[in-house]
Image (cartoon, rainbow, N blue to C red):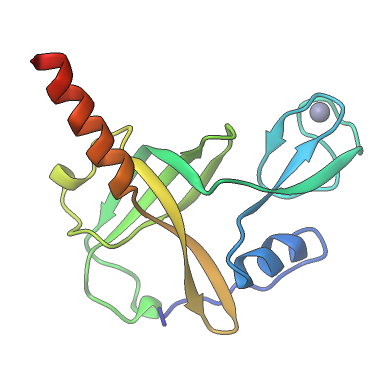
Length: 149
Ligand SMILES: [Zn+2]
């Protein structure tokens, strides 16, 4: 279990946190303009429609930006560097999150790196974090080799 602040679900975010607890990444989608959006809210930020619904998404995306935090706040109970990342889901929305499961050095974090969601217990909640999508990385490397040959 990771340490740090425990999320407190609100009426707007309850579906999101109920999803992470059962291993689902749920994102809202507008039925009027057919776009996903994040963070959760009861109307579409693009067209103001309230005809919106929750969808379970793939949990796959790519690394859009990151920062390596070498001095985490004491509340996180670790002195290990943390990767604070902006991940763009394949559905087109961006989440502020952490990339875990790798040594936190820039060589492991090329922009565009394919990542997939994982759920980390935190208090009585589960946080969506991301790990490198190993299958996608292997496929990309194989494709690069074929291109070179
Ligand atoms: Zn809309």
